[in-house]
Image (cartoon, rainbow, N blue to C red; front, side, top):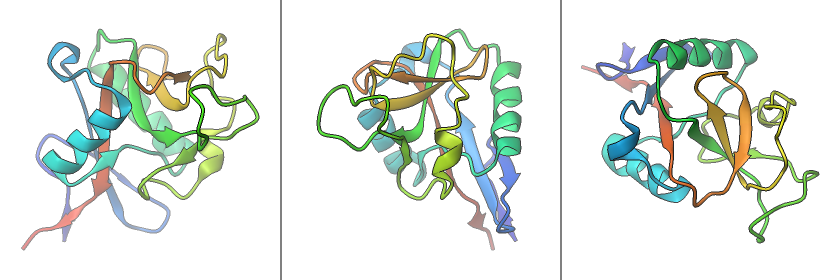
Length: 153
């Protein structure tokens, strides 16, 4: 039976499979850029930056993040704007990376903080209010890793 690692949260996705995610709790020791956090997730947990398949999954994630009383403002999640410049136009949509979700609509559903200004190519979520923000991919902040549950024998 698939299980999530100890200390990780779980969510059963519409395909019936168990998705697991962790939330980085210590911004001082784990704040990194988008690329370095994604590498950390891969090398440490065989995971990627987290994504959401449904609004309900995102809502559950936000509740879990808020229960941790995180001090950091932003938290990287696994969607980026696929363009070659440092600041894509607002018309360029976020795309989930590494298979963390197949629902790109949920990364682009106007669930943004009021000052979302389309100046960043990486998607982050604000822990305290649970809304998306576009931030620079070189900004150092905390993150959430996600992966499919492992089959434990």
